[in-house]
Length: 500
Image (cartoon, rainbow, N blue to C red):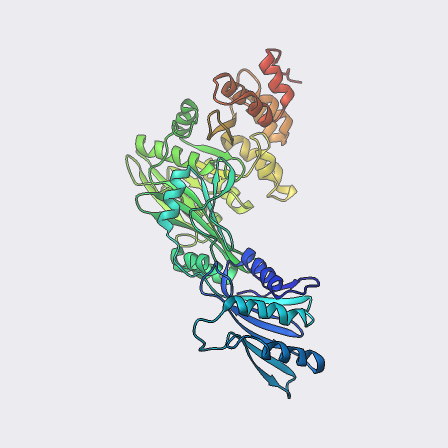
């Protein structure tokens, strides 16, 4: 475990030093049963029976000479029998104290602690210490208990961090649970080792982070992600149910989603910030195709999150690291595997984007995700991965292959929970296509507002949700990118901007 170096200020109480050590260790590693502390003049070991009680047994080494050593002798010699013994090492210049004396039956631990306070009040307590904890709680953590609590709380994520109780993300709020006491670093470390596939565990040991899929049978799947912080493990779970959610369950517009699921080629981008439901939307689209069309669906994911099984379609799910080395290689190889529909888990580099564009341009329906704040800026976001000399060509290719871009945000719903608000771009009018070619975000957004386009801006979607009593007015106003436009729509004064 990591050594914590702490400046404790000027103290005259051993109890205070111990409290500071326990607090520092508890915040990073959990609560130990043994503490080892070292300074330039004093070192000690403190032990206790469990993780909550007071410390009872101590071994202390003090560099003491002359008058200070005489005071130590005087205090110990005058103490109640059995509380303390000492050994002076004249050659090394230190005295070792053991409290209570080993072998004493029913020792007076309160007396031991009082004696320590008396001893340290007569000596100089250093200001800088090195603290180490040992014998942390190593009791196995029940992953089933955590998953069942996640379902009960209707949470989307679990965070396990050393020194803290489990934290659940509920309606996008991080809330601590009393389900378990504060967890120790070794508990979380062992859980990561227990759940990780061998290659992912090796990656965690080498790179101090990993990501993998875990299945709790009968409850659901999770994308697990582990990493080190301050030398201690942190483990997160993003929950996915065993049954693929339908469009209705996700509160997604069925008419739009079914239209996308019936496409025969082109590029569909599902975008949004982390935790906005992109993976769930992609899974619902894939599942609809799987249930209604006789095709070959091939997915490339890191890691596989929702697990599909062949229905009307034949489905092949591939996991990055075990089934293919990287997205660029996976997409290029997929073209030789006779797919009709491809899911590319994330467009995260120029090579992957180039391969995805090529696949969509050769008659495949390609579904992918990207981090973005709205639909109109996605073209610029994609082009930012490329050198300036390539961007004109990329925009031209995007103009020809983009079918739809959906940006989604999860907003608070009346009565609790969250629902998606959408920014939908259909590449269905000349103004949008020209805006894509020019890389003009404003022109794309202007084209999305034309009556001939099926596109729909966030402001209109939020207005419809407010009008249908799904969200309250304050929520709609808070999440509207352009509040003035939303207010115009609400007041009935909005007019479609004229094209220049």
